[in-house]
Image (tube, rainbow, N blue to C red; front, side):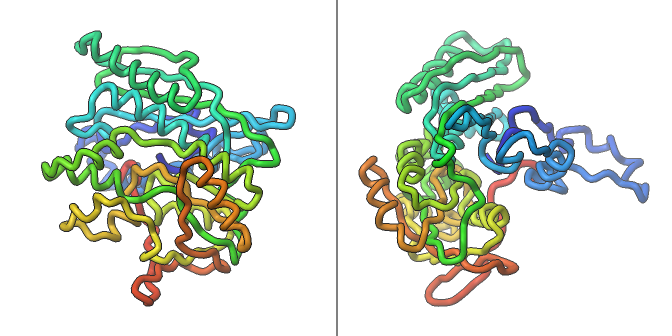
Length: 354
């Protein structure tokens, strides 16, 4: 769940790393050795394709969380995301969880624009040897998540596939005057996040090391898109930019800064941490809070005098909003303030093909 936009509605890149190792042996001996996707990573892969596809037909271009198509006084928001058995399904994740997950991650992009969901379509690729109950459980998970967030599955497709692959496409509406973009952050703005960070990473480590931290595993398997919070922030009139942080906080700050032409200073001690982090003592806290993905919270910048208004709006919807830093004039890197010391905030997080 990375930088996503209309590009994601039409593009799926299969890693060349899955091809036989000897396929390019002759090429490696050549001065014209091809670059592999594992060499460039997901973000550069997107840059390569957007240079070919980008045009002026869509207001947000191809580098925001959603495509936005003008419809009267509103934008029709469209986003797509997939989960694949090999890259997204940890041991213990049930078919019901898979169905929930594919809906939730698609709705998260709608949330980041301040939109209200109006429906989804889901394409399912399934092995022929799976039993019918597996299919039914996926559908039940999809339906449960959609219903919880006031929308429904409007259609989709079903095909045979070697491994489980679920591709969702979400649709939403937002008034043109209320849409939140990745661009728009200005020096002096407050940086804030919704909810708590690190819960999904704790769930991953719980599974990997057999710790049985059930609450963290639930956070990983069944994320909750911050739709109410996104709409509250959008309508507050004080949010200047927003994106979801499914790939990690640090990399998300860099994506917002790149779109806005600014930099950020993040105060480590202010980041709201999931309680389960105390049970994962063998992983540095900064790795969990800054560089791990899967939380599906919102990173938002707010006008300097607007934080109280924004927090009150989010609280009225039952959510939490925490100030974690500020926007500054553009510099070479973003900064991390920890224990009173200024450090480099690395530009890394979860990234496919790596």
